[in-house]
Length: 72
Image (cartoon, rainbow, N blue to C red; front, side, top):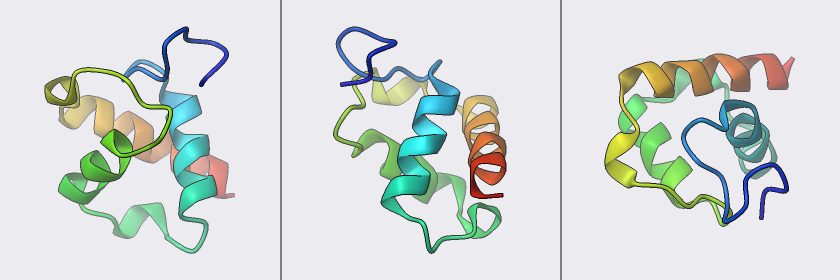
């Protein structure tokens, strides 16, 4: 579980999600992933616990940018 969010990561936990994606897919360049795939990877993270329908384009873009920063 994400210690900053009781009950698991939410869509608002952009940095934590980016870190988890980097750990799960270190070989992936975040700029090459489609938002559909990004959404699916996020909702399947072990610590993710939020409404799957709330992951819109803006939040996915923020997560992607944070993942790019994490990968640097």
